[in-house]
Amino acid sequence: MIPDFQTIMLPLMKLVSDGTEHSLRETIESLAIEFSLSDEERQALLPSGMQPVFHNRVGWARTYLKKAGLIESTRRGHFRITEAGLRALAQYPTKIDLRFLDQYPEFSAFRSARRETPVSSTEVTPDETVEAAYQTLRDNLAAELLDLVKKSPPSLFEALVIDLLLALGYGGSRKDAGEAIGRRGDEGIDGIIKEDRLGLDIIYIQAKRWEASVGRPEVQRFAGALMGQGAKKGVMLTTSSFSSDAKEYARRIDSKIILIEGRELAQLMIDHNIGVSPVRTYEVKKIDSDYFSE
Image (cartoon, rainbow, N blue to C red; front, top):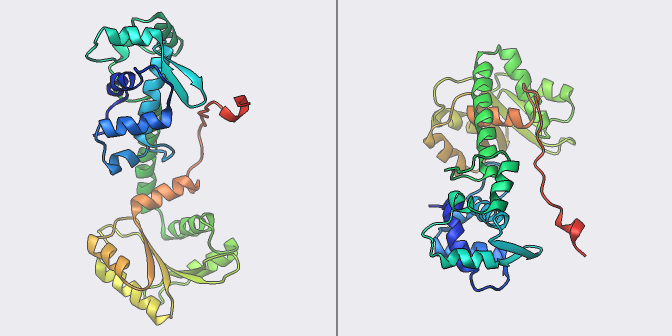
């Protein structure tokens, strides 16, 4: 289990208690070993996919300890324990957390400036709080969007499939894509679309607003239709889901068939602004270390 950032604080302090300079990268590796993290836990990412969870938590543990004056930066990506930090360890604390750090005026001032409560029991970092809130909003939007897609008329569903495939880089012009997707009823094939703008290859499409889970027989029929056309690539989109047998079958056959389920369809629509529009934008910035380097 990946420890929360407050649990990391005391082991981090003990790790740097030798008074020498330590790099953040080396500290992360040493702490990962101390907490016996598995490869999967080491590689687990924040919802944004931009940073490993453990790296983020070690980074915030370091930030809070620095704001309390227990460690100090020495140069880019490096730090060491301070005299105040050594005195704190001399108290043999059983735990160093936000409540412990509140005894230091510098830390209290820092938290007041950020409008945090004096003693917080939170176990997640500010980055995780923001990303969790964003993910909740996104998941709720995806559910609402998928419900609207299921209730939309066939013509609108066909249009959004065209818009999405174009946004993903397929289809050449919108006119070409529209004509291609509109070719229905050819042995289970709903349409064809260019793989690239030059039309060097063709992708065969099947897009259905199924309610029940789509099973292996449907995928087999689509694969057979591809074979009948001498085609090797296809995309199946559904507003529901694919059974495990269907997914396994698609993985094993020679033809490359991509299965897109309802939840993924909604997420792709959000990513490419199909049927949604931005409400507000927040920029999260960080220090540009190169600007301050010699």
